[in-house]
Length: 290
Length: 320
Image (tube, rainbow over the protein chains, first blue to last red):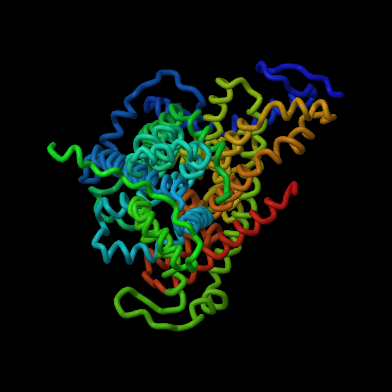
């Protein structure tokens, strides 16, 4: 019989020392590969002009400065749109898209997982199938739809389709399937609670991790939205679009480009840090079954 | 206020008995009984059908037509497909590159996600949270992959070129993103760097739900090391996440077009990293040849769904 010992207060199998070393080396090497580029962006964003021009490029900063971050607002001076407008656009579409997706998606997830009505399996299978192809496939026809609706070059073209995005809804449905007992809902219905009321006062408070997961997924997709085929007006373009314009400006704007990239990435990372354990909890119920 | 006494007792909706009815009648009864469910699901599914399901079906229809948005669509049967397969060399390059991209990034990203999630699962919770963030961050950080473009910059300020020159491996800076030899491999590396996403989190979630007593029982029953434990206990217990992760990894592996465009340009040098997604953007978004673009979209759709269904079928057989 194998020898048992404890690790993190849990009984685990005896682990060979060789395996421990191998795994540690893998994690460190792969971790550095993942981490160094992120670290380098942050370091570059803090370098003053003279350090940015040092040759060879350095992996540390001697006199950190925040001037790159303030210069960010001047970097797009050749565009007549103020820099803050790009940030405003991104915040607007992220918030409006995410809340709409939360509202529509959670209603649909509740109905599909907890009410036995004809067609629920078919609807859910379509949602599941939609995870299997990239949304680009729909882009050709969507452009026609958008122009027929008169949504080309408006916020609606970005915000409304986000309300129907699938991954968050899919995860929420799977989480509800296991996280809410039918008995609780049934007793609420017997007490005369309407479905809408049952959904809002009983089901939703029980699936907070799934809320957060949907919010994070929806938000990060919208926040990272770059240029879109539906948007031509400069004043409607997003922060990520502006960042890419700055970064492609070359060495002269290296520091500012990195500062903008840091702002860009800090927001989704912060959102993820606050919700990590809840997302992992939601993911534990993910699966491809009906 | 006065008719308080007359408040009707709310009727409880009971499932209708299925006897004495044809299937159609019963279904209709059930639809009427659950009408509120349809109303609640309507907003989501209206948008879902308008912008996801409908476009795919319409694309398949348009792929058999010539349509330029101004005149009516003209039915041409499979002419678009014939033109794609026999008359469009760039499309054949695109298919080839797409498959190379998918066959490498899909499985590699899947295995990296699984192995990393498994390795960090035994770390203490706080450390695990930090390590998870390090591995996951590149996939949620938007355009941060552009830093790779800076690192591999063509002039000697690019970090990689500096190292190559410094140690005498090369005598002049390499134009990495202008050289056909390097573009594809570099794009694949960067794509992999951003690829520890949803599948990775699903594996972490799956690993944490496995009942610890199973490992103890396994140890008693003669599981000798961690590799056996992983194979005989861990994997069978997280099958649902393995399937879900596979779908995420496969779909992702076809969607790296934006990274390629950002790094190598649109089009890349001699179309050396041109993928089906790029071909679609070119014809659909820039040339407005809707019929032709729809044929490209349909082929992409069939390839992605095909890969997903095939892999899911194979994976669901494992361990049975």
